[in-house]
Length: 300
Image (cartoon, rainbow, N blue to C red; front, top):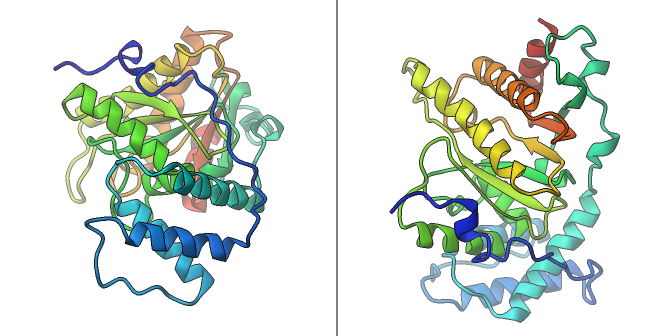
């Protein structure tokens, strides 16, 4: 079965329907809601039987995240979903949303940079799940179902955890319909649910095992991730701002210096070829080391 195109799955996941989150202020305090959710999830089949519920708030919240991380993409009853949504909206309200329109372009830091589209570029260090870009990019694996390792420190886990279980549900609908793993360099799009963005672009980047040589094929596959995301976003008129994570540079092991060069050059060329389409591109990084890698690209 061939890889699905947007037209093949958009209606399946109700992509054009606006997600309306519940009001973030909860009737009870967050800990009571977390207790209710943990107890509900522990009653589900195939949950480890030896789980002990901690007394500390942060440990309880971590347990809830872990239980959702390992949970297979299957329906939850409406009451549980509403409680999860309410909790995630409350947490988003607590940590705050970052307005990408107010972020400075890289031109302010590197006015003499060689990229013709740099007026549209933003380099920002922080949590991508706080950005209100129209779409954010998730570095997924070939299964495209999110990270099932509890509390794993990858962006796939972070995005799914902040969006809520509906995100995994949509991914499962797409992948079940496709009937095969996602190809390297391809992308799919879903709604973003409890994230401040509207959409999530999921792309599968190349893996460069430690100690192996970086090949031109891997370079081309990484460039394809950026192009696939941009082409997919181009099909949705209301996507004007996109936040890219540093695809493949985490556990996938792609060398960070070259990854940053490929990211910026590829996006710059696509914008040059598609003028007046995308207004802002945010290169989102998590660490200061990653920030400096991108800054070097703009200042060399």
